[in-house]
Length: 119
Image (cartoon, rainbow, N blue to C red; front, side, top):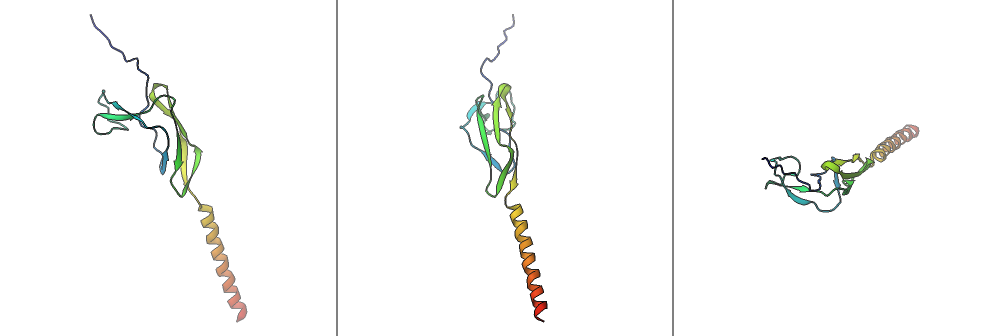
């Protein structure tokens, strides 16, 4: 006779997706045992990894100087998989710096024209 044991415990998600130059808020994760020898994302070096409950939603935000482009939320779904975010962090003030550069060039040109006019 063979006895098969199945875990009927609810699935949990491992580490959420990583987005360059972004971090997320959300509830603290619980520590879970890595019984299958898996040492993927979230491995804490002691045989444990952080786990998130099903339905947890994490809101991502970009580092200072960057803004969110796209969908900023990740959700822990069934089978322990994350859905989202679909975003990137873009540098702020890119257009402003470009505008400032153009303004500086225009002022320099105006100064050169004034000098030529005075001569």
